[in-house]
Image 1 (cartoon, helix red, strand yellow):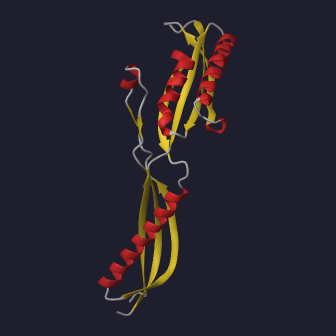
Image 2 (image 1 turned 60 degrees about the vertical axis):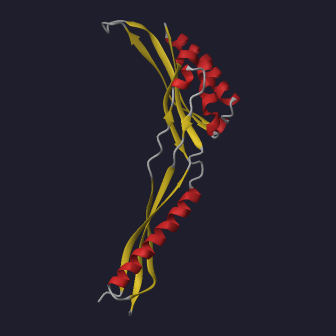
Length: 209
């Protein structure tokens, strides 16, 4: 008869995300490359300044892409101009200010602005992972105790313990009501919850009944 029982425990911890990540893009058209880049620089300066004025710190602003591409006529035979673009990732650490930040960006960049994606995250997931690990170990202990009871044995101490790689749950999809902007208001973002999961493989000794 086996002298141990090995089980897998899982645990999850959740919290409301406290950081909103905005992936935005500024794109401008011009007749030649130099003019497109110059116009882009002007719009970008205004966009970055607007973000800074609304509390987005320098370390929360990052360029994620940049390029210049030709624009063709309908037949695809002749170049009619060029489009220059740059993508930025902005982390807004006060969720209540997201509406104001987006409105400020739109005011600075005008129709050159595109919001490619909005996501939410927890600034420091470490406390969540601690809670998830505790829940995983408690789950493993409960499972092991049940199997020991079913086998007519007593549950002994832990003989071995290993962690299954923590698996962050899916990022919450923000709900954005763009109709509010048409009415002259902001763009509310509803955060939902963000979850972190942990798993543990635990081996317990089995004693006599």
